[in-house]
Structure formats: C-alpha cells, structure tokens
Length: 300
Ligand SMILES: *Cc1c(COP(=O)(O)O)cnc(C)c1O
Figure (cartoon, protein in one colour):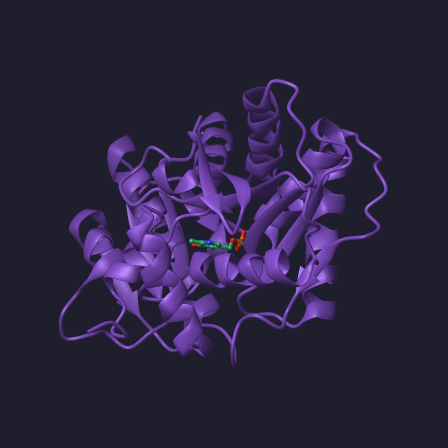
C-alpha cells in the first residue's frame, strides 16, 4: 500500500499516488511488479534469478535487492558498456547482486541462457525474468494497485489517471483495473519510448493476457497513449522537461528525466490545453525514478 497525496497545481486539486515510495530501496513500479513476480516464483520453488536491463534499469535494481533479501542467487545481464564509476541503480545493483555481465544488446538472450545454465549446474532453480518485468504477474500488480487506489478513494470520483508508459505492463494492469474498480476513469498513458500504434498493440496484448488470467471480459477499446511528449525518444531530454523537474521539486514532487518527468510534463499540457477538462478529478501515478534522477548528467 502506497500513500495517496494531494497537490494544488494549475488550479487543480491533483492526487498523487506515491509508488515512488513503494517499500523497497529506490521504490517505484518495478518494485511493485516484482513483488507479484516473486510471490508467484516462490510458489514454484525458485531460488535464484536471471534478468536483464540497462545500467540504470529500475527493474534490475529491484530484482537484485529482492533476490538478496530472499537469499537468492542472482545474475544480471546488463546491455550497456561498463561505466568507470557506478552510480544510481547500477550502484545499488552491484552492492547486492552475485554477478553483473555487461554485454551488447544483440548478445542479451544468449548471455541470459548461459547464466541460467550456470545456475542450474550449481543446483539452483533459477527464475528467468524478461526486461522490465514484462509479464502477466507484472500487469497483475497494477490491476491490484487499481483496487488499492479505489479503496483509498473511499467512493470519491476520479476521471483521469496520468502515468508514464514504457513496456506498457503498468498501463495494461491499470486499464483492466479501472474497468473493474473505477469505471468511468480514463488512463492517460504517456509514452517514454514507443510509437503509438506499437505501444497500444503491446498494452492491449498485455491487458488481454491479464484478462484471460483473471477470467475478465471488459472491452479494451479506447486505450489512450500519447507518443508526442518524449522528445526525440527514450532518454532524450529537452529544456522544458528539466524546467518542469526543477519546478516540481520545489513543490516536493521529485521527478526523473526518463519517465515521471515526461509524464508530468505531458499532464501539465493536458491541464492547460483542455485535453483534461477544467472540472476533472485527476491523479498522477508517480512510478518512481529517483535513482534515474540521481544518475542523470543533465543537471548542474
Ligand atoms: C519502467 C518504468 C516505467 C514504465 O513502466 P512499464 O510497465 O514498463 O510501462 C515508468 N516509470 C518508471 C520510473 C519506470 O522505471
């Protein structure tokens, strides 16, 4: 359970769902997803894990921390060149993971298979997790998060949820979750990487997979995904984004340049241009990213 905060912004009384404070060092949506993935894996007798991500992957950091807490062995396949000094997520990961393997993107699958073999030969029962924690359990975590939110609202209404969308598993879970627990609420997904058509296809696919897992049959039409607010692509920054991050930090909302900063920046535009009408009840789903901010080189 994470806190639900209020924030006065542009004349709106916004709500902020504080998954940035999800109880794991560094917090965030990857920690929430991972708890569901791990719970499922424990029931299947796993005791080690292999996963992958970039050097500043929140997913890899969350996986490494939870694995260490459980006493699991972990091998992390990092698709980046090894930096001379570790910082942010990579620093935390390196403190607790048994092994980091830095490889080129093309070699990820092969290296993960190799790591799985090594662990099996050592007598472990390793769990294989796709990058970003992209799987039905990850989406399920956000279906349950929507239930959690609906209980926290205590019958209060909500028209829009704004959330950063990467692999789309978080948004997929929320799409099914609002249809089940918060009917009438629209999820506004802000893409941080993918172009619209591909992203919507992936979100729909994850949501369908989740619905068949849960035995639900809601219509999944009308998924909103904006691919015009990410600058030139994943990890790109622009002056207005940095300005939004500075401005919101002074109000006590710490955003990051890769995910939450872009989603919040998009929301500000929606509030201004009427995409979100004046009399709406709006929630910003804060998905974390503090360690991405701490590793950013764009601030002086
Ligand atoms: C991964 C991530 C997202 C996007 O989540 P997806 O489920 O991959 O769409 C958003 N915010 C932060 C901070 C993340 O690390």
